[in-house]
Length: 493
Figure (tube, one colour):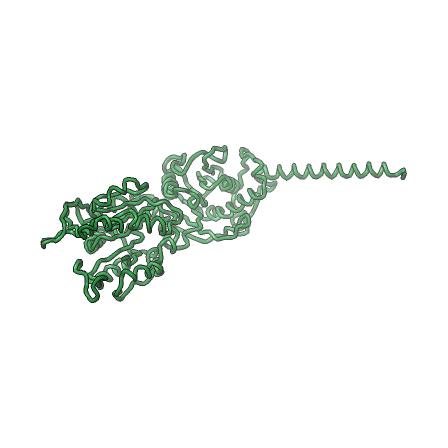
């Protein structure tokens, strides 16, 4: 045995022990470094390259009362803090945010810590669970701050993540002081329609700046849009749309540029043209992001049976972007009313859509002895038509009617996403002008309209239907006027 072996082993053990002590000391020093918010020279923990010009002039505040949980020491947490600080720093330079500002962050504690490291000592975040001193308890429907008490709200991507973005947007606007700023980061708003939707959620604020920012973080390479809003010092609106003065905006023009073309020539077989044209229809949710809406509404005017269009088409085929729609079925024919009682999420209005509130006389012109078959096909006991002074061959009933345009204005707002299907047996030539006159047409985002005219009859080649007096050219004019007014309307048969 080599007599020098034991001393060598002891020397090796001493070296290993010293190495372990050194590693432990380095870890303790690293933890202490992260726990202290500033270095000896008073610099922040990071200096984003994009904000170097402002870094030297800003004052750093050591937050001794901010604890340093284990999560805050992780690289991922630090990257998130540094990323948000790089996004927030330009607002300090621009004057929208200052060290004396009372600031609220809706996206997370990393945002609040980033603000504090930038010198905004009163920054706090909002979450369901309280975690002082960085996080206070609150939710989307009620932020724990008085009205007009906050200078700066950093929403981050909170609106993207919110189940009810309209509620959160309303709360953010409520707590902001006049001339205070709200900053939103979103993966949407790239198209004019979704940008207008966000603006509609914030009627008391105006958009002052917009830019694209790099969202590279934690391996996620993408681009976000930053929207900067400022609260009007003297708000004039109440949050409702002034639809009587609505106009065609860029958000509607961009959609219409991608819409399927109208069929200019009268089809000889319209029942076949429908099937072919459905494949060409450009649905609005396929053209734009509809996420930033207060609620989602489908109005079926002349719904007939539930399976006619609500159950067979809208609920199965319309692209809803995972949103739940409130459904209104408007149907005057009592033959269909009973089946709606068992349909969840559907509100039946058992009246005729009309231009004013009154009682109308309708002619039921069904085929005798075929009532059951007609109802099974979604036609009830026959089509109903406003009665005229001329003699009618079918059964006549009195039906209550209501002012559809006024009902629409009282039921939905510009903040809602409204899809409408209209099949009213020729009454569209009364209802559509009324929607224009009242401005209610601007509340409709997408319209599927069946226009009735004296079309060629399937039964009798060479003969036109005597049921309607309007021509295909008049229908085409109706569709064209809708599109010229910014309504994404589709020809429906």
